[in-house]
Amino acid sequence: TLFRSDRLIQRAAGHSHPQFHTPHSAARTSGTSQDTMAAQYTITYFPVRGRTEYIRYLLADQGCEWKEEVVPLNEWHEGKCELRKTAVFGQVPRFTDGDFILFQSNAILRYLGRKHDLYGKNDKEAALIDMVNDGVEDLRMKYLRFFFHEWETGKEKYLEELPNQLRPFERLVSQNPSGFLMGSNISFADYSLLDLLQNHLIVAPDCLKDFPHLQAYKDKMEARPKLKAYLESEAHKNRPIHPTRKV
Amino acid sequence: RRSSDLLADQGCEWKEEVVPLNEWHEGKCELRKTAVFGQVPRFTDGDFILFQSNAILRYLGRKHDLYGKNDKEAALIDMVNDGVEDLRMKYLRFFFHEWETGKEKYLEELPNQLRPFERLVSQNPSGFLMGSNISFADYSLLDLLQNHLIVAPDCLKDFPHLQAYKDKMEARPKLKAYLESEAHKNRPIHPTRKV
Image 1 (cartoon, rainbow over the protein chains, first blue to last red):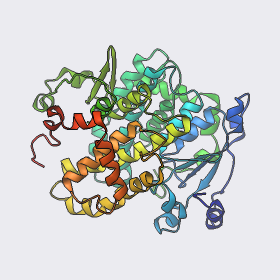
Image 2 (image 1 turned 90 degrees about the vertical axis):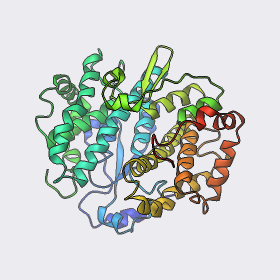
Image 3 (image 1 turned 120 degrees about the vertical axis):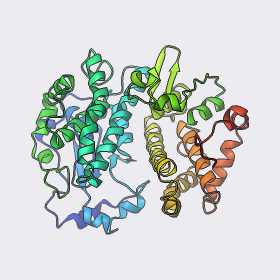
Image 4 (image 1 turned 45 degrees about the vertical axis):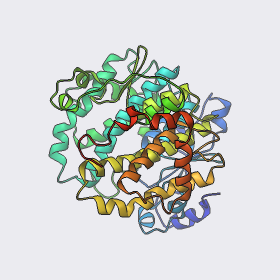
């Protein structure tokens, strides 16, 4: 195997984060397909929301269970993690479904999108979902650059530009009769957009004031019962956006 | 360019609509206001309109059986394509915004960025980047390698599998014909800089 999970457990033993836990009981599977119930999902990542929290939103909302493997940031940066050498592009998150190992957060989203019928009803809807997810990802990249690398110097400019960046999503949601970002039903892109909006509201609490459809969209997503339960869980609330900065 | 390579190699025909850069920057293009994220490329298949280069690649990937033979292969193809895209983003940032200031650092770091792709190709019996057959990600990687060779002609000297991969891709008859066409050769990498 590429990865020795036992070694990670030993290294992480000194940390307060639990190495393995199943999420809040409200996220237990109920009436899901045989395929879903047989799935053994694991997310391996740093103890931050980063590029994984929207994957958790998808899993929780779809009634899936999953395990967490925490990668301590200091060990990663000190080169003590075997995974850093074996990961295909030297990065986390890593996702496993039984023996199947996958990297790259959007590849993970798309894999789960296919598995859980969150990828549109035909090839054209799938393409449009890809398109809007890539748009969400473009804004996420800008946000991550600002948030992690330009927090002091870039804040004014980022917030000034933010309405122009959010406007396309306001337009998309307002034009879609289903109320989701794209297509006739919820897609993997919706979990990604929700996470993006939440992160921006923390940085700029009034950033949706001129975007009523995005505000309604966020409220509607967060009201979905299984997702709501996850959002209220300790697992979610205890996972910070930034490893050290209190935002 | 990646979509053009894919289309040519798959024996498709397509039309080009050229957006003059000056008109775009001066705000004279209606498309800039109507495009979903205010960007090009735009791709149409009859009445169907699509933006975002990787969404276009994936759409063509599905249409032309270039997306693996099952969901797990598809996921792995997504994974490696996203890796290609990550390096493309670094390349574009360097090439268009840090050409003078960032060159030394970029070239120093480049082997570490290429090594994962050397490993992937060397480990894949089919000789393609991922999966048992050619995928949309191969056209993307080919383009990325070609661009890097222009900037650093010896960047594949320690990566024999990538060199062989590039040669094999470029030898595919329809793709070869396209790469030798005036249409391809007259389309520059940079709008003004002679590279």
